[in-house]
View 1 (cartoon, rainbow, N blue to C red):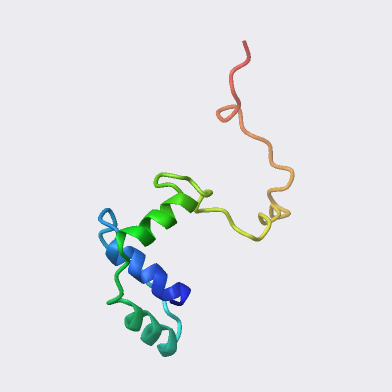
View 2: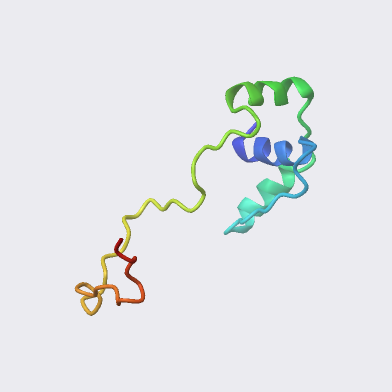
Length: 90
C-alpha cells in the first residue's frame, strides 16, 4: 500500500478522525488520493501504527517552518520598545 493510500485509509478507518483535508496540486495526485479512499485499515494495522506513535503524541509544533525567520527590515532594526511596551521596573 502506498503512503498516500495508507494516510487516506487511516483517516477513514480511525474512529476519532472526522474528515481528511487533502491538497493535491495535480490531477494525478487527486486520482491517487481518490483511488486510496475506499481502503480500510483493520484493528491490527491501527494497533501497529499506535505502537509507533501512541495516540496523543505531539510530534512537533505545526507552525514550524524549515526556513529561518526573516531578518527585520532596516527601518525596524534599531527600533526599541516604547514606554508603553516596556515592562515596569520593580
